[in-house]
Image (cartoon, rainbow, N blue to C red; front, side):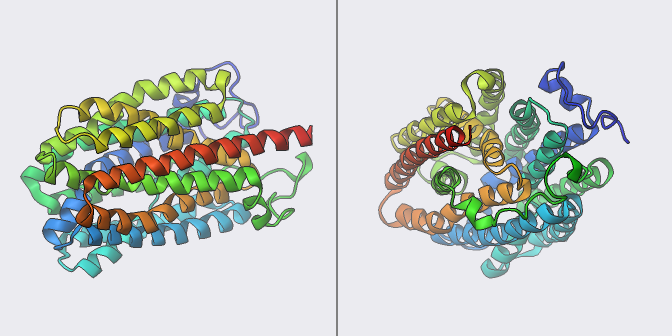
Length: 417
């Protein structure tokens, strides 16, 4: 066994989550990979809409279509990944394949001038989803019966936040000096680095021991569809559909709003997207400290409620400076819906770690399938205020369905006890 794996069956009971991550090779490597991935996403995502508009000649609707195609590819691959790897538990090899496909595609994006080709290639990059690592992380935490599952996942997730912070703040400077071509070549280098870390430092958790209860794969007992239609799971997936749809208003359309309405330059766009992780680090650490007391579900309700306030505030803001404060609300949203959302869905489907992550990711991309072109059309034909009012309404629906999921989950626990 490698470093950090000698006591595989024993949980890390006497160490805090930071010490657990730093002293375990798999956790530490996934943390580092997420740092690199965060730099890539933080440096590229805010400028993808601008690249599509400036280099491919796309309008707001076409930018939404590119997001839609990317969502379709990510959803299809993610579902296949979850179902197959829950049965084989060979998760690492599948991620290696996805990364190997995405690497040359990132380089090819430098030479693209066609909207259709750009949409397809950008979609293929989406196969290398960083959320796939949470299935591996969940396998190890459950294999070791670690009581700090939520806390450890939260610390590992901060790797992505730290990377995003670096990427977003540096991207404006980088794009201004090296252009979109330099951006894609730079992310290709980072992609190769994360792939090297993956191959050398991450391995799959051992298969479940049949003598300790359950089958070797531990998923054949109940059909997948029965797990997905359980009220607690179904309501939560609807929640994720709504939050994913609302996220389009920020991740895809906010850069255009900042440039076209707020009159912000590239450096200012990078600052807005970079300031959020500055807030997110202390918010996540605080949430990790109190999650054991209040529970994952309550923190998620608070975070989704913050999303209603965030998009409502954006709808009323047309100057740059207020965004520096407004983004603090989105830090709460991200910590709740993503940081603890992955923990929550794997708790709801503990025997299907890969499928749970895939279902979460699929639900999070179903919303953008409709929201991306719809909100893009609204921006062009109704006005930008309508985009952020709609996003606030979607978050309000998500708040209601999350409450229903929590209520159903508590009822199921009472019936089982």
